[in-house]
Image 1 (cartoon, rainbow, N blue to C red):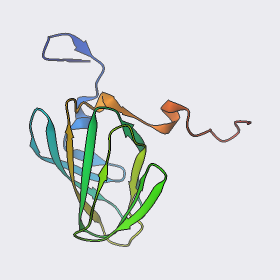
Image 2: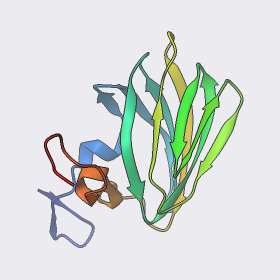
Image 3: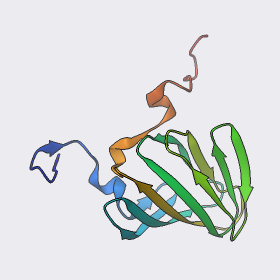
Image 4: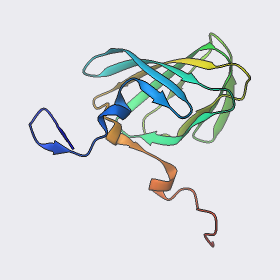
Length: 135
């Protein structure tokens, strides 16, 4: 457990909100303020970030290199270098790299709260049924 600014314990995984290597690639926080964070995100070919939702922040993604397959709500788009998209708060979203080269995205997060404990995934929300679930 980590201590937050009020010196109370928190279950937040501090390393998930900062730079580091993930199974799908790498994240490097470039700049961070109270209501924004700018990160350089690399996604390996044929990998992607699992579907997720944030309630207190919006995100802007700008493709620096490669191709991004972005799902935002019910819309799916392909973005090439120099193209961008906006992910509003409270919208289920994911990004995948369908290509053969590393996808590089600049991610700009804006919101009153940027903590990683504001991230929920579909299994957490019961939006996706596990294999073997009956209807």
